[in-house]
Image (cartoon, rainbow, N blue to C red):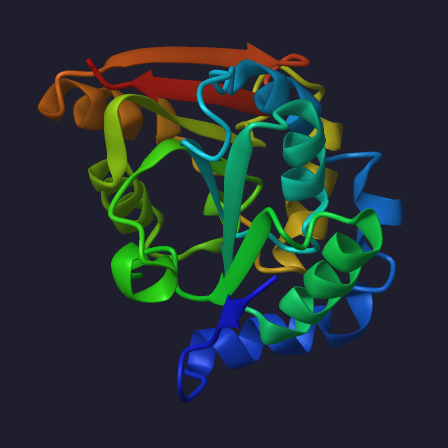
Length: 227
């Protein structure tokens, strides 16, 4: 596995490192109970089984590498890439990927999902599949991150998102408690995610699929770009 790091850590990077410096050791164990819909997103990537190595998948906000490892197992012909702002999380991701035996298929880089340059980080100008898994709710310029990610989806490819919903169909007390808890980790559900993605799909001539999961606890969406 090879990695590329950005020189100089900005304030957002420092914040993420502070949040995850210790949490990264228990992140996967604790998050599996409430980051719902991640495995469904991986299944719906539907990466084609073309010539080995020709299919490319990029995760923005890859965290511990958990999703990339599962996607690598599910799609053995694909090459996978991950970007995260936190170098602390990337430390855990590198370790997990090495233990999984996927170091030859997964590459990581430290980068900002709203302004990264895929060509300089990975030597790739586009990806067949790009996805965010519970990352947009932690990215302040999340609309810009969506725009940037859609620009690097290759013709015939797709952008996928799973994240917290508005929880409007859940009991008020549950939604209120969840939002207070999430705020402690600088997480904010994006209530207008569907509208923003609809506008982006229209601007790119793409097709939007958007679903609320578990009474709007989570939202699962994709934009498919014509081939």
